[in-house]
Image (cartoon, rainbow, N blue to C red):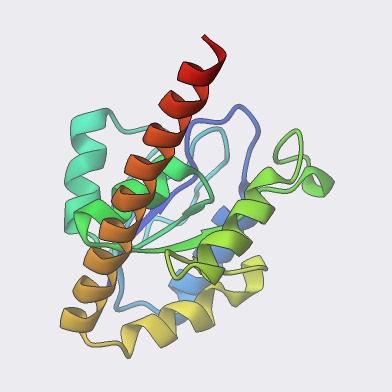
Length: 174
């Protein structure tokens, strides 16, 4: 399975997810990984890691999204919807204030809602990553692509409705 791990560009580390990914690599050596580790640390130079960097520029990130079967990530809208648009299923973990990963727990709430809506898998805990990848690896790649297309279509429809609602509200107060 081809896995893109990205923790985004936030100034606080998401070492909890990076550590879980390194543990997962040790028990799933046949997966191929591309890793964007931000301000965290990554020290596992295995042959299954095709590339590891603190940050990727936009064209590189687009190429990695297109390459991946799944994206393991913090729970940010840009990453989730970018993954779906590229045909990669998002496995997300919300950054938490309790671990000094963010200023609040909005990503935890967003991850829960994405999972409920069928737009991503909320890992809920970093320790669930290995099992979640194993479960996703059992899915047919055609089915995964279909799920991504359906989720991307639903999110595009929601965005269109949201924009219309915003303009309607703005028009009524002008």
